[in-house]
Image 1 (cartoon, helix red, strand yellow):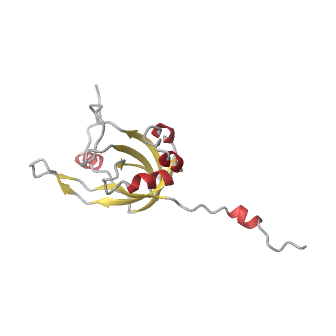
Image 2 (spheres, rainbow, N blue to C red):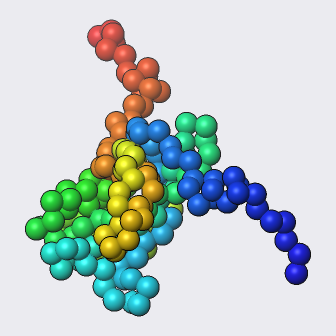
Image 3 (tube, helix red, strand yellow):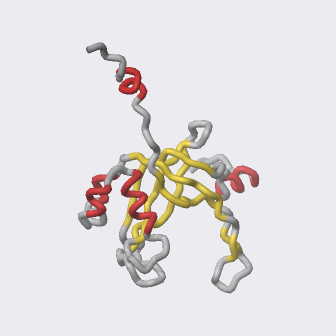
Length: 162
């Protein structure tokens, strides 16, 4: 087997990818999971269901980046509002309000919405070591971007003679 060894700098860049600037970005749902690697249901700190999602985001240069975040389904989680905002942004409010979104997530793969990205600072690992988790991008919230239909606005003419 033949391979090209990575330089120390290349390895560092791969293990700590460049973060995107905080701001509002278009995103696409590319993966989701309701279970962990052992096929156990994902649960938040309160023991309520959650979903891990992977979003493709295009930075200001049009380069694709990926961000992972969680959606929470229980009313006791202070971040549950993001699940409704996700549904609004991805035009799935009817599924959300009918209680079917959790079970119909597959239908949203490939759909796009908008999210507000922020940089979560590096933080210590809670495993007794002196290691830290590196800084990363995360989703602060999902937003609905008002679309303007310019052609329709130009077509409307209130100066209709009678």
